[in-house]
Every structure is written in structure tokens, then in C-alpha cells.
Length: 393
Image (cartoon, rainbow, N blue to C red; front, side, top):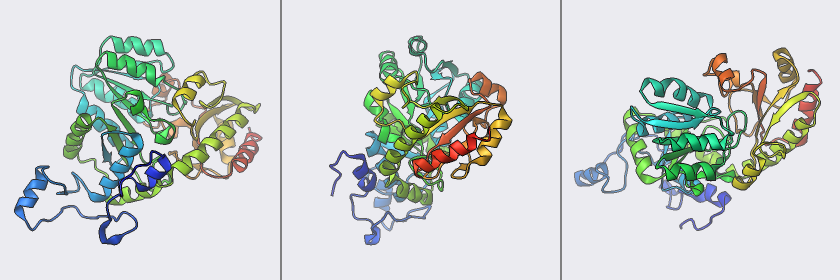
């Protein structure tokens, strides 16, 4: 059997599982082995040199991890995929393997907190020039790229303020100037957005979030051009930031319901955002599905759904925020997103906990902002709880 369907719901279930599974298993087995043994030295040598299919050592490749990589590759439409122990492992290995001292990278001010730390602290220490541009200013992004750069790193929608970048425009500019384009697609998922289709070279995810969807496994994945992914793979092989077989198994289980979960979260996210936007005790709502979002038209053009993530500010100080959050019932106060259960928290303890208050301020992130990740609960129940919580503000 081979995958002929282009429908993401079918791909999420069957991709990577076309061959008969070991022992006749109906689900991908957990191959919990570090080394792989060979009775024939010639066969062993051929596998070790990449001349034949097989596995040598799980720091390099593993059968369970390989199925997860293949499923992600087909979902995003890339040539090759490799998995990592976490989303930040995917991001850091990608940047550190593709950039060298003297290179210049262009990115945005609103990227995820861990990514921002790489741009503000780690890469400059390696004599890599970093230009962080206003996220919503397409002219400024174009101008920064046109000065010349090795790599352009984009994230859309952004974490946590849900800003939107015009992928078609930014990628066309980058390609015209010979830059590699990397896109963090964690918030959108391949169900709502496929950056490789706009010409991006690489797309990455924190698989801990929507791809896994159950808050029980950490992982990251990089998909895209075979030559670039191979370069990153060689770096990961030495750094050792590999995904475990058990985590790959849990992520595979989650991926099979990705399409179902994301479509439900799209509906709930829009309903919750519209409720909050009309509430007198909410100062601001950030969600690309709202017609009032500054890049709503761009989001409509490049996304098939607006996602289950939003952020908003209550009309009050940090004490008011704490009272509001304390009233909520159907929610985990936790630093993650994309799960089947709803999660909430301010960036100071979620997306930008790695940053200082001064760094968050420089990135335009208010200390009273709340990030809200819709789960798969009933939308009416979530809205009723939010309404109850706002009465305490």
C-alpha cells in the first residue's frame, strides 16, 4: 500500500505506515533499542555507509522515530525530515548548523522566547549578525533582507501576540537575494498552513504542542530541502539531541487525530476570540481570525484556518489578571499549548519565561498579556468560564 490521498486526515493516520509493521502490529511498535545488530558484516557495513536501508544506533536513526519523521514530511510536503528531543533542539540545531561566524540572519522581534534568546544572546556571541525587524512591517522585512543575509527566520502566527507575516512576499524577497528561509509553523500546524508551498526551504515545529496534542511527550521536527536537512542531521548526530522511541510513539498516536483536533480548535478559537473582543473588561484581543486583526486579509490568504491560539489583556493590573485566572475551571495554568485541554498563562511564565522583564518589554510583550490555548472542550463551556472569571476583574 502507498499513500495516494492528499487529504491531511488520511495522511496523518497512514503516512509512514505503508509497509507491514513488525510482528503484524496494527500500531507502530516502540523499538526501544540503542544499537542494532547484524550477523552479516557486509550487510552491517552497507547500512553503516548509507548504501542500504537499516539502522545502526538510535542516536542516528530509529525505526519508531523514522515513522514519525515520514508522517511529518508528507504532512508538510517536504523532501526530508528529522526529529529532535524538543522544539528548541530543532530550532537551535538548525540555526547552529546553517550559520557561521560572519554570517547575517534576518528575523522578527516577535518570535518565541527561546528563539529570541538565541538571536539576542547566543548568535551574537558567535559573531553572527542578527537583525530583528518589526514583525508587522513588510517593507522593513524586505529592506533588511535586501541588505544581504545568509538566512531568514520567520514565525507566523507569532508567539504570543499572533502577528502575521506575509509569507509569499517575504519568501520571494529572500529567494531573490539567495537567502535560506526557515519558518516556525508550530502555531499554524500543517493543517492550517504549509510554508514549503510558498517557497520556504525549511519548516519546523515544536512537536510537543499541536502535533502531539496531549501534553505527554516532548519533541521537535524539521522538514524541507534534502540537502539542508541532511546538514542539520549531521550536526544533530554529533550534538545528540535525538527524539526517543517512546516519545516518537506518543507523538505518532497524537498525530493521528491532528486534523480532527485542529479543526475543532479553529472553531473554538474564533468563537472565544469574538466573545472576548466584545467584552467590556477585555482591553485587547490578538487573533488573526478577527476582522479587526491588522493582517486578517493576509491570514485569510495563506491560512486555511486561524488556529486555537489567541492572546488578550484584561482591563486592569497584574492583580486583576491573577484574580481572573484564578476563577477559571476548565483550564490548566501551565506553560504549553496545542493540547486537547485548554491552557492559559502570561508570557512571563510561558512563551517568554527565558527572557527578562526588560527583554519582554523590548519585544513589546506586556506583563498583563495572557496566552490562551483552546482545547477540544465545548466552546460554550469555555466562554461561560471566561465570562465568570472576568466578573472578578
